[in-house]
Amino acid sequence: MHPRTASKLNGIEIPSGVRVLKPFGFYDFNRLLMDCFCIISDSGTAPEEAYFYRKPCVSVRMTTERPETVEGGAHVVAGLESDNIVESVATAAGQIWQGRYDLEEEFSPSAVVVNCIRSQITNFF
Figure 1 (cartoon, helix red, strand yellow):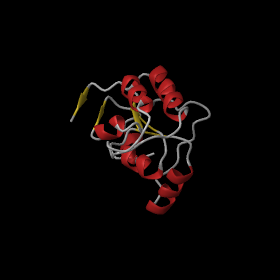
Figure 2 (cartoon, rainbow, N blue to C red; figure 1 turned 90 degrees about the vertical axis):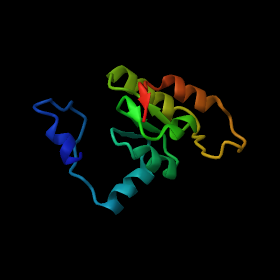
Figure 3 (cartoon, helix red, strand yellow; figure 1 turned 30 degrees about the vertical axis):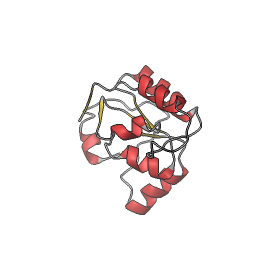
Figure 4 (cartoon, rainbow, N blue to C red; figure 1 turned 60 degrees about the vertical axis):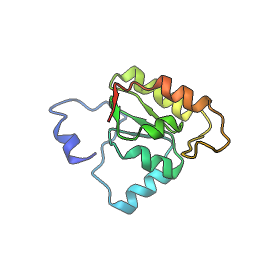
């Protein structure tokens, strides 16, 4: 957990089963990304990292600086409600990863449509 995130918890109890770890160095963090099931983050850059490693990504926020990752079918913006976050992880991780930037490339548009509908984006930057 990033120190700024930890400082904002202000006495919020972390649920059992959730393990909070100190920040990792660059190489260790990238190794975690390579081997993960799904990236869940409040970071604006996580969708780019997820895209690079071909991992499903769910942002726990209401906006994204990377709308192309949602439009490309690789990212769901879940918002802040726990039910939406859980459903977004199931959506993102439950489909074959089909993210792409090349809009001329052959692809199945279903991941793009599902991710855009599932996302709780209130505005794009």
